[in-house]
Image (cartoon, rainbow, N blue to C red):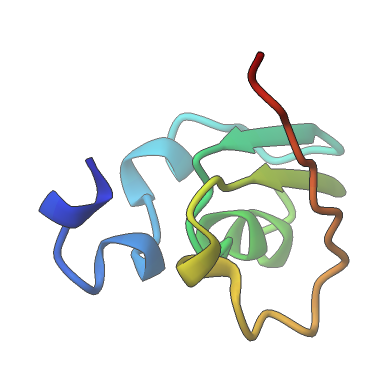
Length: 77
């Protein structure tokens, strides 16, 4: 699935999503957040005071040292 996305896909800001969220102290969960640029922009625009992103593609999240991260491992039986 990720192989079909172009290289810049995960670093795009989702302006279409941002315009739907009113200004305020919102808590936002972004599943499939890519590099987290949309979440960062939501904070900059005062549309969220707390954001959490989940991204399964490890290549996208490598090098994001300015953000807290927790790796969740799953095992399949």
